[in-house]
Image (cartoon, rainbow, N blue to C red; front, top):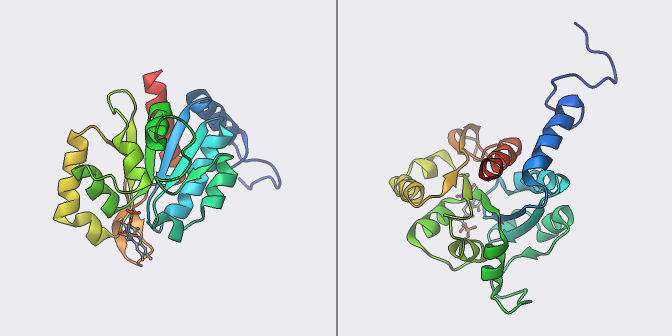
Length: 215
Ligand SMILES: Cc1cc2nc3c(=O)[nH]c(=O)nc-3n(C[C@H](O)[C@H](O)[C@H](O)COP(=O)(O)O)c2cc1C
């Protein structure tokens, strides 16, 4: 059947229309009023995280973005500041605005944290307990028994297949980190394979699912 011009298509997965409205309502139920820390590390997929932050903020979540030095090479803090309407943390040495060090107060306030994209380097840091950037430092102060931490890996297919990456994944799973993806498909390095970051909608859906499951 031919589409009716200018009429939203029922069941369409686009940004508007009835299906999107329903999805937005159920997302809002899951995330409204929740404090979500979004860590961004230095992968080419960092631009997709703008959509994640936008969707969460539109649904009423309090989104705090933290970025590594490498992440800032791919997308500006200003983009995330505008989308989240909150300060963006790009260094562990700034925003010392309370008695607690910044990473402790951000970690304690979080209902959930997600790192997207999560680089090979970030996986290695988290697996070995290194904390020398603002993202890994905030995560180091989160008790995962109380606050879920989700990682959305994103890297070239050879980087993903490295024994070191696979060892780190096994360690991180055993340590209680949750994972979103990665997917298989086209990569910015013009290869096709595993390691592509999950799409923003899948990341948002998993955040909503995890938060809903915790009530
Ligand atoms: C153009 C370019 C694209 C990159 N894309 C990725 C990527 O998608 N995934 C990844 O793990 N590393 C990627 N890297 C390498 C990381 O940026 C590098 O390992 C960096 O040190 C990561 O730092 P971070 O984990 O502190 O953010 C890329 C590097 C360059 C120059």
